[in-house]
Image (cartoon, rainbow, N blue to C red):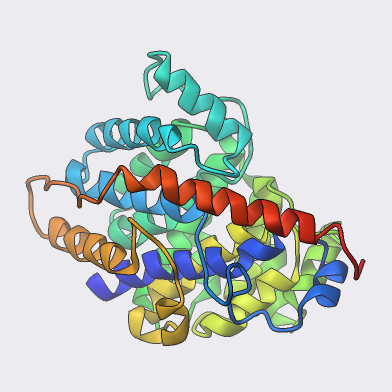
Length: 350
């Protein structure tokens, strides 16, 4: 369990850091800018993470202190998100920003969500699936609480459930049973999710036929890259997982090549595949190449260890501490690097 949990967290971070430099770029422009997608290109060969990884870590911390109680979980996650916003995170999604501001205004975490079908909830759900995938009713409660904290559109919940169940299946199966996975997603989502289920089935059929993830994205009308809409993000991520269930590097190349919101798609996929291969299945140079503080790689490993231990206990545990004052400085450096990449994109090749 610890290997799967820590693999999910670090896999998310690596995917996030790999995809970050190409966020918002079309597949065509991406190919002109860089040829190697399996190493970091963010900061002198080093990788940094965005809000995708930070949300996974906050979710893991909330699971630790809640002992699996949905009520304690959502209260902890809401509290963390309020203070996370004070660190001035770059690239925060509009729905998440609005919901977090509502939390600061005193709105209950049960009513803070806004009408949005964005992918914010999906990037928090893989770690929930690894921990509680063997208890579907509990899994659904936790995913619903996490989703509705920021997103109230049912589509966001369907996508988050699909990611959580994928991470669970990845963590327990050497070979992914796609048919079994789809049946469980159908059961979890219930009525109203027919359009989403059709997209998941379409992704499975495409992957079985050997179609590339980039080609599948194009077939969904995403020739300029994958958007942040949950019905775009999750089917493309699942396609790459179906194609490369135990090949972390291959999965990253496939989903990043589709372009668009690459940090989020690669982070979600990294969490799923990372849960399956564990820490030992992640490329060691990419683990060592993450440049993060105060939430360092060693801190993420500690969160994974504490979360695994908490699952075997009935009482909640304390969250894993870190040097909070360093967060603002880290985020300012991160913002500066992001802006530098933005200016670089104004230059050829186009």
